[in-house]
Length: 207
Picture 1 (tube, one colour):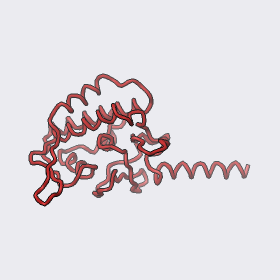
Picture 2 (cartoon, rainbow, N blue to C red):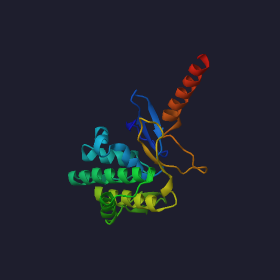
Picture 3 (cartoon, rainbow, N blue to C red):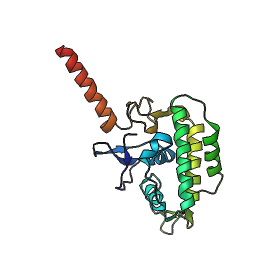
């Protein structure tokens, strides 16, 4: 994975990640459940773990594409469940991206999380959107899991992609009209690919 979750809130879709070189860039995975996969992952991707404390999950929710104003309470047990759901979504998205059959174990994790009550939105007296009281980690995870089910069973299920860079494993759903998105972000892996191509052509010309 070529980035980690940033710390600066931004209400435009996507998250601010930071490259190995310390350069921030914008990554929009296209859906809430894939935003969660930027916080770490199973196996070798555990080195990118950022969900160490319940407050880390609260901070992620604040940076996510969820609307502002969520007053979230997260327990240590819910944090552990969040990491398990994150890893399950990661595995399922990777399977989708590479045309493999979905594994039963991560499907069970997603389905179990989705069975609980989700976050509840409401209309405030001033006509704006707000969140109902009682937002918990479990409700957040139910919302994320239902989003994953919508993704993996919906019209964009075959458009889940892994970044085309050999050293980047960020996952996203390609919602563009032509369906030809290759990179996590053009300003990051896309530009690096352009530079490599330019250097290769320059070297070939000199040869």
